Amino acid sequence: MIISEFAKENKTLYLKDPESTKLGKRILSHSIILIDKYGFENFNFKKLAVAINSTEASIYRYFENKYKLLFYLISWYWSWIKSNIENRILNINDSIEKLKIVIHVIANSGIDDPKTPYINEGILSKIVIAEGIKSYITKNVEKDYKEGLFFAYKKLCELIASIILEVNPEYKYPKALTITLIRAAHKQLFFAEHLPDFTDIKINEDNVTELENFLNELIFSLLKK
View 1 (tube, rainbow, N blue to C red):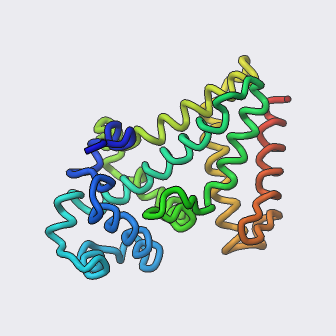
View 2: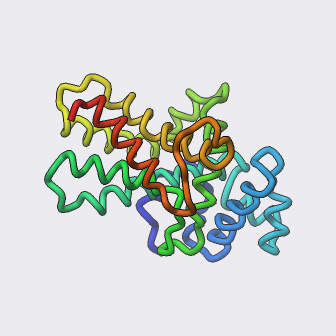
C-alpha cells in the first residue's frame, strides 16, 4: 500500500488513512457534501453512515470523532494548495513571479480540481471558509497545536512567508502578511457570494480576476514592489 505524503505528515488526524481505501475516499467525499449541506454542528457520523451505505462503526475505524474528520479535511485543503504552489513555482526563479503565482493559486482555491475526483475542492473551500475557524477558536487549541493538528497549515504558511522574504528580505512581518493574504482571499470570496454590499469584489462563476487583482495590489503595495 502506498501511503501519501499528506498521510505520513498528518498521522495525528486519523486512525486509518482514508485515502488508502475506497470506503475511506467515500467517507471523505460524502462528508464534504453533508457538512456543506447541514453545517458542521448538525453533521454527524450517523448521517454519514447512511449516505455511504455503511455503519458508524466503519467510520470510527478511520476517525476518532467528527472534529478530527474536520481537521483532516481542512488540513487536506491546505496541503493541496501548498502542492499546487510548489508545482507551479518549480522552475521559476523570479521571486515576484513566484508570489504572483501564490496569489493566483489562493484566489482560485475554490475551484474544483478534476485530478482528485473523490474531493470536491470547490465545496471544501466553502467549508474551510465557513467552518475553519472552529478548528482553532477552541479551549483546546494549544493542545491541538502541540499534537500537530495544524501541521499542514503551518507548512503552507512557511512556504508563502519564505517567498515573501525572497521578494523583500527586509520586510518585518512575513508570517502576519501570509495569514492576512489567506484570510483576505477567503473573506472576500464569502462576502462576494453572501454579502455583496460589503465588498467591491465581484465573482462570476469561476472568474476570480477581481479578487486576484485586489490581492496583488494589497500584497505588493505593502512590500513596496
